[in-house]
Image (cartoon, rainbow, N blue to C red):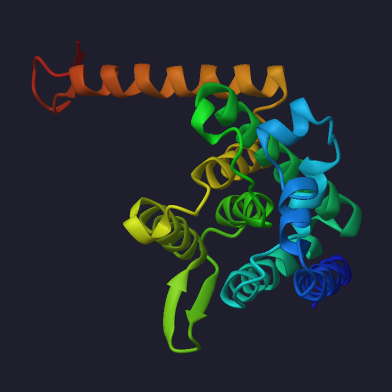
Length: 235
């Protein structure tokens, strides 16, 4: 386990235990939801500007599955990424994805007024950013799922993302924030690919256009046997 991942685990678990303690007092859970979770109403109408950070360290106090799943993902994908970037680069990526996902949640509230009062909590936005980065940086690394089934890193990331989307679309997954998940993936993609840099984005677009042009030309070009008197290339 790497240094930054270890401290994120400690802080998240510590905050979860504090949630359980506060939740035992009357109005404790309501206090957490109203002041520390992220919501359009709390951020814009009550001026609670800290919510895009605090919501990342909160988890569902009514069960242990939420925090266990998130901490497992943090350990699985975070440790190799921290070794690649170093603690400083890892923290930077983690918080940009988490806060970025929070911004997407707020924009969703702006577009869908019915969701403005719904509080959101959890580290999923940052973690989905980590999964996208792992898929790009370690696409062919072999991982043994449950210690038995070998699967490549990119396929494991696709599996995790797919399961989360399916869970969110089921009737029992109405409390899963798709905006947080896709927000984290969006920021993770742009950070790890460098598309946030205008020059690099333009270079990638030009490369994509050149590849498309090459494919079109390759379909029109045929090679004729040079031994043929009329041999050569024609278009």
